[in-house]
Length: 158
Image (cartoon, rainbow, N blue to C red; front, top):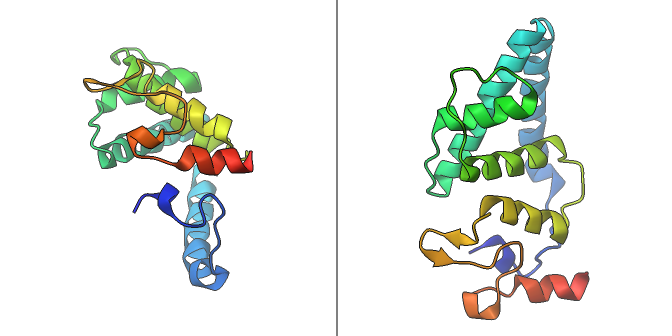
């Protein structure tokens, strides 16, 4: 089942008690990691952030069946963080799009997840208007013909 097929999409509910322990454990580990990073110099902190973000982008893309070149991902992220990219390959448009989307999602996590934001992410991921050999609608909800009805659901709410 896709998330947009959930009967309550995009209104979600959860039981706080069932997730609070897991969230607390993650938050504790995150705090410990941030504490350790505070003791490092700026260069080591920046390198740590670069390594973690690179790993996140590469692994998240792999889940979707996209195998990105880790060095191109590293180059794209380093450029956006203002770090030295000497010796790294220039990232392709597809890699830059994934990095743009991931940085927006992680840096601006507190911003509302709006239709416009989701469509912008989609447009950055598929800047050519194609997925493989197939032409796709970019930056918009799937139509009924393409197997989706999320647009109707959002149109009712926005």
